[in-house]
Image (cartoon, rainbow over all chains, first blue to last red):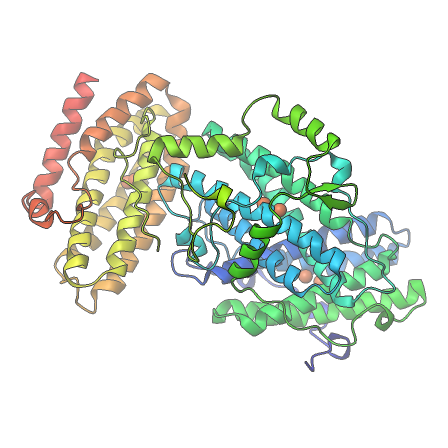
Length: 399
Length: 196
Ligand SMILES: [Fe+2]
Ligand SMILES: [Fe+2]
Ligand SMILES: [Fe+2]
Ligand SMILES: [Fe+2]
Ligand SMILES: [Fe+2]
Ligand SMILES: [Fe+2]
């Protein structure tokens, strides 16, 4: 890989502003697009939302008005990028369709990251989490068939299997057990920082999305399922954000954010099948190179350190959307019954876990189980896509 | 695509006490049939297209007889919302009859079908968002159920998927031209509304 974002100059910031005409991008066709194009859009939307919110937090903690103005300038461009990226999603898609695509992102993005993650503790965190979003995909897919009579495979298109993961009812843990140990910023592989930031941003966007769109549904089971999974996405944000070393300075974090945007736009530009969308990834990469440059200057000025000290010497291998079926099957076979205890993982339901379970379920079936019962009443079967054979866990095979 | 078959609205075991839920599921059925037409060839495609044309006819007729008249009266601005939907339905019918004149294996067929699909899908979402939400808000459960019953009566007129080994194409042809099907659908709906 020869691409080093630190050595490239992009579009000067004062030439990055776009007019209404340029912001008005044509959306993708939901019935004929590459499902991974939609996944890349959803991922980059989450990344841009994090860029905006992080910059707001930084501004609120910045005293120097000149620096505040500098942050505002870049942030406005991030906001325009977010508009362009998220507006690639078509108006004809229903909330549930977009939801299913969000869970496909969670499965195949986290799946890839888990496979590539060099640090075993971090890898375990991704492997643990991916089995939960995998189960969410299955629950929402069943809801989708109930409400719209459509199959989730018309969205995920056989790239991702749809079947039970770790059952959603077990995702409700005592909040203290969601906090992980962070990597060490000085010794960790730079790729690990990018992974953590990426997955944290994607989960945060998923949490925001569910907490806002859930009440748009009128069907009681749909409203309740969004509440339940929305709460789990909050746990996931806690889980992944705690992997990031809190010892990184604000400026270091800003540099990491901009670097990660370069990394992801570059990765997606390399693999994009839709030429119009590819042109956007390329344009945004050229904008991010300049954001990175500005962030690096701020870090030098405020921390008195060279950004090269905290970044990878060159861009890591591109992050790729591709099927992770065999890897997921391996995890389904080996990690279904894990839960967390403190910052680690155990196989037995411990006291704190059981207490939380008792309190939140209140002796009743959670929405994630009731959706399956209601689906069964309607169709006399479940909805699954098991393209690679029966479920690896015999207990999870359809009865 | 998996071999799982999603039954059409009315053939699943939903209680169908809500006309909006029922019509939304039928919107999905229509999309499923578009998929079937696009993914098949020859006789299979001809048969799937035949079923699509009929389901569309029955669906739109039921809406025109049941929900559009209700929406007109039910809420502020309903008149205009319904006019917009009717205009979309008329446009779709024109594309549909142009398609009906083509052989399903004609090279022009698929591009035209896809254009129709886009129009039908935009129309369906517009109904769900700008008409159906108001309907649910403007009426009570009894009325939602009465309207559901009328739509179900219409559905009974639409040919369903042929069961394996059963020659249903002939049965579907026996249903006659689309115009006659629409008339029968109207009669069925009106009868159900009266009895409801
Ligand atoms: Fe950005
Ligand atoms: Fe999830
Ligand atoms: Fe998640
Ligand atoms: Fe940026
Ligand atoms: Fe209609
Ligand atoms: Fe409709």
